[in-house]
Image 1: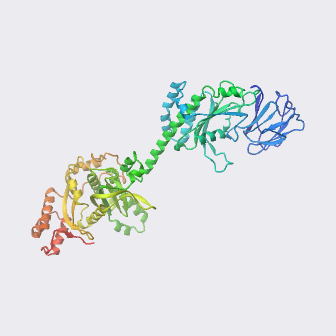
Image 2: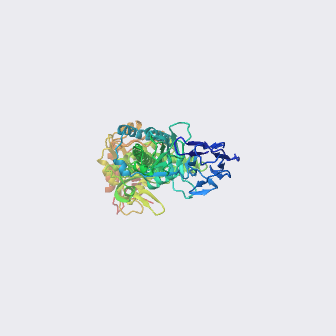
Image 3: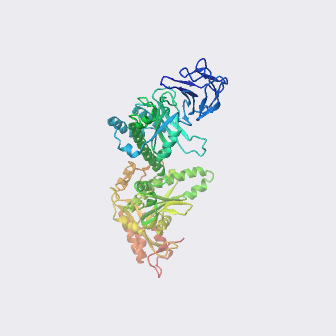
Length: 631
């Protein structure tokens, strides 16, 4: 509800009356004596001078009565009837009548004369606090106060409390938000939170003009309300407010936000405009404005940091941790720009997907959930080894190492990820129904943000990507879980995978895949020389020396796959590679004998045997040691 404030020449000549609800159509008579509301101090007001009638939207209608001897002035003109809105005033004799809202914002805040002060940010920064120790103590507590707020509402409550406590002359503090409205009829002002020094007291209106001026100019503004007449004392649009300042928060993280602080001066304002201008700000208000500026700056910076952290947290669903690390100190466009670099690329494909999709044709959502969990195992270990998820191809995932940061140990990381993925599926085949085939290739490729104007993604492009995919496909031919190209195998042969000894590799064959002209030497990754330590570290959730980041989390409740059910000995590997050498040399009889010494369950040897038997144990005339693979 609005209030009507009458202010005479002296501070004692004042009253404030609540305007009744608009449903009361009787109206209120205002006069010097015997009226509903008396103004006994002004002889120029008749016994019954005006009638006030409440209207909707906090407006009132003022009508000069026939018994009134002296005129009524509104807007600088003599009028007999007019409508008054909150923030406006009219004058009879030596008394000013102001209509004020008890809460919310005033549409026209200037009552009488408003002295406005704009604070230069540079000058404020150079200004020294009179009570520096107290102010610094309050500022040092702000970071914990802001970051410790669990909700935005709690943050607003804490900040208004700090400003109210640190501004002795303040009676009310508000945090407001002002946006330029598209419709000029709307104020564009929202009160986010406000607090009062006296709980339960009706709060004064907030000057939308002051807020608009401060936010639009991005500089702090102070309003002092006083009369322009030399024979009048200071007055305001509220019982306990004769000044207010507004400090905008200059940060995109708090767009349109501002601190609004209002209160009473410790000493009466001068009635002389010249004298008022000479000492235009109450003694401590400059300190208070500077303190609010510092609070606003700290709030803006901390909210910006928190918003950046939340944005990065959300982006972790789209970018690998290694990409997020690269983005931390560099521009996004710079980090994601496509560039040619050395990569280790891994393709991992689910085995058994086609069979299960046929069997679960009436339970596709259930199948989707199982496939998602299976792909989650792949992504879990790729990310754990600081790789980047390049793409998903149906039931396969592609990961790569060496971008956006150079990784000299990229092949080691790719190999460890492959072993852990393979071990997981080997240990959980009965539960998931899936096995896997993995191909790893190394070479130059273009990595980064690749795509068209309509759609882009972070991935890798080049022959090495196609080669890794081809190797993954060959795992079906050779019955081997993990196949490597020659570059990757050579890098792993001298590498040390953390505390797990050395990698165990086996040269399988030299092949010519369909559609390729150049032969390709492929090897099989069998594990590490200390598989017990590798398994133990996985069971305990401990990464090797080449995996310094935290695990992104388990995907299926199990992160302790056991060793594969069958393992080749070092003698088996030597026998196979000796047989391979004799196979390439064309000595197939000895090859045949050596291969039969290997375990019956070893499937790669069957590929060599099938070639020998297909040619009746006699190498063809053009034999070059290369196995041509069908499409």
